[in-house]
Structures are given as C-alpha cells and as structure tokens.
Length: 139
Image (cartoon, rainbow, N blue to C red; front, side):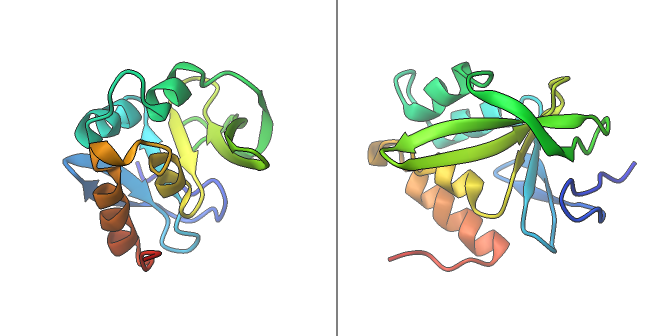
C-alpha cells in the first residue's frame, strides 16, 4: 500500500535515512515518520536523556489540537502539536491520534533536530537531510 501525502494527496516515496525508512513527498518536501522511527532517529543522532528532542518526545500530547491533515495510514484527522522552540518561535507538527506516526512539513524535521545540543552532532544529520531533500545548508 502506497502512503499518500497528507498535504498534497500524492504518493509518498520511501527514502532510506540512516537505516530508517521514511516516507517523503517530492512535491511539498514533507516527511512522514512511522511510529518508533522518531525514537530510532533520536538514538542514531546520539541524543542524551536531557536533550530537547527527548523532552519533546516525552511531551508529544502537550498543547495539541485537531488539525486539517489526514494520517497517511488511517485517514483520521491528525493532531497538531505545538512545540515552543524559543521565545516567540514555535514548531507545529502533525501526529496521528492512533499513534501511527508524525508528519513533518518541509524542513521541520531539521528544525526539531536543531533543538539538540551541538555536542551530539545533530548538525551533521541536518546537513545530510538538507542534501538528501535538496536544501542548502545555512552556513
């Protein structure tokens, strides 16, 4: 079964990212991570228990509301998760209410990874994602 992009309603491509299969929309550059794949990504990037990504993951239900996009797996309306990045900045992600996974609009996965402390090397993962998905680094 081919998954469909929650934004564009077109088929998603499967991309192998650091031994994790992610679904990618070539049109809007969004990324779907199935349940458990974010945890795998956290492990691959070497996040420590006190890192922001772990805190984000532990509070996935905080500040959620019903969104307008449908889950690529079950077609139910996804929940919008609002994450406070810093003063005045927020990141809004979409999560399946049945726990099938998370949807990241273009560059949101990189923004989430950017919350990690520099010491764990997430910047290399961000660079890899930018290269994989066709965005130039901000250096």
